[in-house]
Length: 425
Image (cartoon, rainbow, N blue to C red; front, top):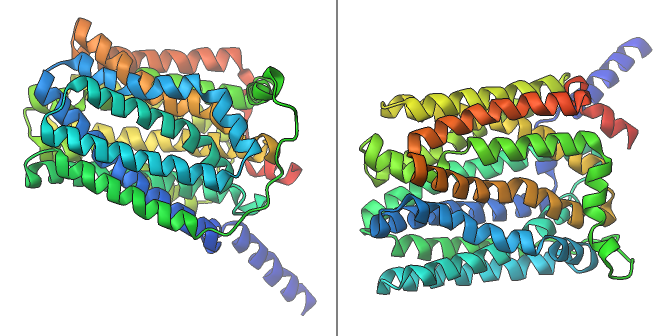
């Protein structure tokens, strides 16, 4: 009888460890996640609208690349300051103020679109959007991990990726549909502002969290503590570096308006599908990872997934068939999700709470900013050599980066189950 009870208890423990909804069982995490999904949906809709409107008005690949540059520069400049504020101030309040600024930027874009304001003013709105994101990213990332216990971190990383990808599936499709149905980008910007307001309301409803705030005097040493922590943790540095260069070199998203209009010869609705495709693959993979047992060989999975990302990027660049291009984008999103989940879990499990804001800010520059810099790099390369060479060379570069990372940090290939790190905390 006791043996049966032990087996039953062991089975229950095992089930609890592999509960695919572990993080979602916490109220504040659910509110946070729903709010972020809405905010991301609005952001993705807005991204499609900006890309379509700018290319329609300028017919310039460099103008598309400038969208990323305008948003990433504030993030880079404000990295140390925004991370330090996230560790010293109320993270919820910082998040609320950042979301409010994003809403105002969306409304500004709507006014400029309606009145056919100058492109310079559009870029000015994008700069302020970058400022808002610079403070939003570290504060929201640090706040999120306060809403759940350490044992749910891996599951939360998976659902965090899932929620982002869900928004990235819905957002671009709605953005493309909105442009086609409303006859322009103006209404899409208004919808993005409404989504931001809904996120603001849900964030207000999150319970007040007790935070272990940084008490160090403000100094260059305190500001750079996050960078020092990442540098001293070589596995984290390797994972972040690999993901950063894969996104920087292998991203084709910024050039999708060109591929849609000039190469695949499709309209705004199909552009929305193309932009949603990576997120469809990513969402499928994230849900799969949530239900499957945890990865036992995280390092090899990380390296091979990025190699696959490079391969499908090359095929996309060479494709002239809409459905093949769509499939390659779906696969790129699925493969990218594997590295995202591994990296998020590593970073959060091994980062102390009083450093979460500063480490999140560094992570933001490495990863989130690389999306924008990657867009600028793709736009610049496309302007000089054409969009096909830009995408294909980026895929080749991604594969080269995997080889380099494996050589510089051989320990990354030996990384086993991430749950081993949870047990040591």
